Image (cartoon, rainbow, N blue to C red):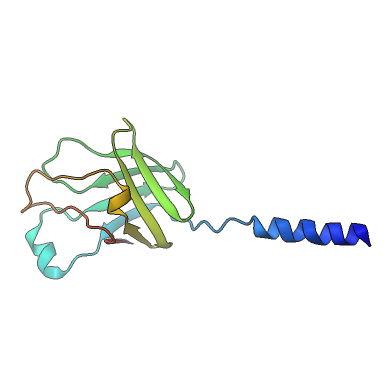
Amino acid sequence: MKNLLFLLCFVCALAGCKSDNRTISSGTYKMEMEQAQKEQVVLIPSLSIDAEKKEFAFVYDVLSSYFPVGTYKIENNVLTATTNDELYHYVFEIVDENTLSFLAEDSSEMTVFDEYSSIIPQDGALFQKE
């Protein structure tokens, strides 16, 4: 009886340790914008993901000479993308396999050279896979 009880507790403990991390697939995730906004900016912010290599490229400023690329990790349904030089990080909640929600408060501060041609993603901005 003791062995059966031990086995039952062990199985329940393993079930409780199951990871609930969502995954994402390779592709480009573009920020959702209203049509009027799309017509005003030259570049729609987008996050390109290579799921095999765990690499990313994040584009949001058409005039910047800095190109944010690097690697990412996923923990607790949150994707954290860190640039190769480790100067910047961008954080997204994984809503589902095709949708990311930008977490501005947890990300590096972002600026753009020209507010008329580029837009900074705001907290909660949704990025949809193309």
